[in-house]
Image 1 (cartoon, one colour):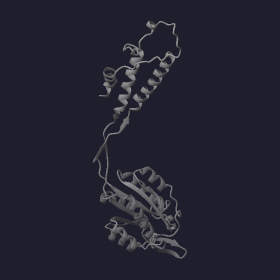
Image 2 (cartoon, helix red, strand yellow):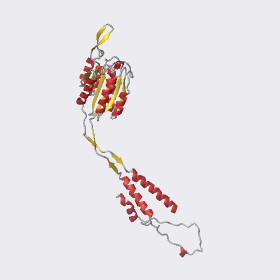
Image 3 (cartoon, one colour):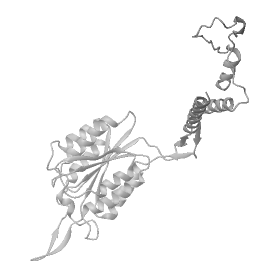
Image 4 (cartoon, helix red, strand yellow):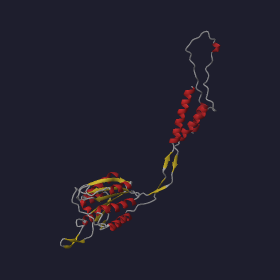
Length: 318
């Protein structure tokens, strides 16, 4: 309809008239020589100006129609799940008993948890680091690359050398309170190698609050099995995981509907994270999107440039 608007205006509205008002009275001029006021000459349709105006109008109408270029259909996984990883970075994570004896506990966790993050397509993932205090390293985000990168940059002792398990759970509850929407599932995977000996919130109380908020918590206790080592007085038995409070971790999981897992080496830790993939699966292909590119800028820009050129030509020719 807009395409014919200029034609309708030209067809049904009266033409503009030019009224010449004299500024000099000359009585000696014969009145017969006065010419009556005549309609202004319309621009002929065959003129360059007319076709330029028509083309300019067509470009503006095309831009108003908002043309778009649709890309290929893409399937996006969608779960509606918020997943937070809480990783212990206290001083005891420096013990090298999960791998070949060269990598410490935190290095092994970085590698295994990093692979887990990259597999969680469709989940919003957050990262909490805790030691003597608990800190939100990354809020919930779909940018898994950034979360994995910040996990790899983590160093032991960055949050203190003690262990505040209750505060880590409290930090997750606080973060989810403002970002979680109705119906979305929320999961916390808490990994530690010690017992709660710092912080302001007791783990059991924090777990009860998490259960009220329907936050499901999976706990992972890490630490090597007891082994014999050569001492000054001969062989002796040591337990690298002597400080691990498995009872508290099991209680936290039970109160919130999760599970407790025990990792004694890298292989068992990988098995645990694959088990979590099964317990909290991602859903693939239930949302189809088509990326769109807006194209209206091209006819709009062309129309504006042409209008400036027409105005400039009008001014030059009078």
